[in-house]
Structures are given as structure tokens and as C-alpha cells.
View 1 (spheres, helix red, strand yellow):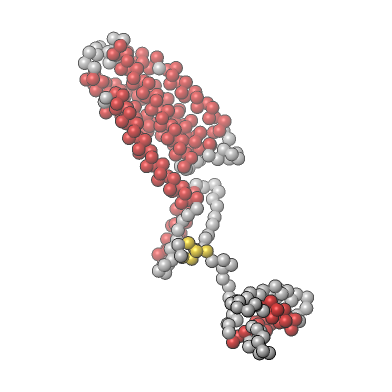
View 2: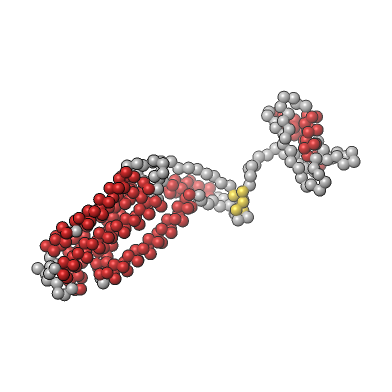
Length: 311
């Protein structure tokens, strides 16, 4: 590297470049760098480099312009490649908005440009967005498999499609509370919140199994019939177990009240979803589920237990 600042002695620069570009026998190329702080020095350097000798062989000094073109241009410092294709990366961070909506806006802005790209050029949205999309698809697939497994387990327990669906009705109601909690805290649906939804499904289904199983227990073993009094008695006897499940969510309150704190970026959306879903699913167990069972599930349960007395 030659730095001519302080003295514009181009003969000295030329001599230094000759030393810098002299390569051992058999070498193919050499690189030299000159620091030119002003535009005037850059102009003078072009004329000088054009006459620079590449090597001295037997006293001959062919000019550099005879074997190369000296031009003024600009280009990337490095050229990245992926799958034998050149790649240029444009990075950005998001703040105050969810990643999915930001990428959606970027895609809308770039759609006219992308339509006019030459053949062989394309735009790919990667990084955290690509990872989030892949994780979302995987969680969605596993959630469907989990729902299928839950339905089969409930059917094997109750031997009734109707009663199995009665238990699974807790899932959409629990989701209402979870979504409402996300909206109140101004959060978006992320991979962490989806994990919270999966955890919530198990808790909400457990409460439904307890209540409907107790309906059947009272009729089968304690002489009750499928009456409003039986449903009221079952609800009263299952208040403590259901509330114990709901009160366990109190342990998540510190996480919900600490948004943005370091180390809680993943736990905060999970706790928000689970706590909001517990509130709505608990209300379902005490008010909505008894009505659903009386209107839609009572007749199916009576057909399974013909000895049941209806009063």
C-alpha cells in the first residue's frame, strides 16, 4: 500500500508500485493499493498508472495500459454466492411492529420491481422471517396431528363422537381469551404464542373431561338422572378442581406484567396466551359447557345409558 499524502512525488509512487507489483517467477497476478485523498490526485494517478510498467524483463518496461484497461468504477467489496448464483443481502430490523406485517408491506412495495426483474434475478425473503414461516408450518402440522390424537383418546373414553366434541369445544373458547389477551397487550401471533396455544389446549380439555366424566359418574353410580339438578350438582362438586387449575395460572402473572425485560422475550407471549385462555376456558366450564351438554349432549348420553332416569 502506497500513501502519497504529504508529498505528490509521483516518481516515488511509481517506484513503490513497481516494487509492490513485482511477483515471483510463475505468479499470475499481484495487487497494489494507492491511497488518494483528493480528486486531483486521483486524476493525476490515472495518467500515471496508465504508463506504469508491469515488470522489467531485460530492461524492457511495457506500459500497464498495453495489458490492462485503467478505468474508474465502483462495485461490491465482496461477491457472495449461493447455489452457484450471486447473492446480495439487504438487512433490516423491526421495532414496534410484528415481523410478518413488515415483510408483507415490503413485498407490496417491491412487487412492481420484482415483476420487471430480468431473467435469472429474483427476491427471496429469508433470515428470521424464513425461520418463522418454517416453524409456523411445522407447528400447524403437529397441531392437526395433536387434535386427531386428542379426538381418538376422547372417543375411546366416552365411546361417543358427540361427547368427544363436547370436550373439544373448550379449544375455540379458550382461543378467544388467548387472542383477546394478545390484542390487549398489543402482541402479534408468533411462534412463542403458538406454543402457548398448544399448552392451553391440554389444560382446557382436562377441565372438560373432569366435568363430563362427573356427569356420567353421577348417573351411572349415584342414581341421578340427566336433569338440571344433576348438572348443577356436578358443577358444584367440580368447582374446586377447575378453580385449582385456573389459580395455577397466577404464577404466570409476573411474566405478563414484565414485557420487554431481557430474558423474557419468549416467556412473555407464552404466559399471555395461557393466562388469557385460562380465564375464558374457566368461564366456559361453569356457564357454557353445562348448556352445551344439556342441549346437544344429553340425548346421546341417555342412549349410552338406558338405565338412566330422566326427571
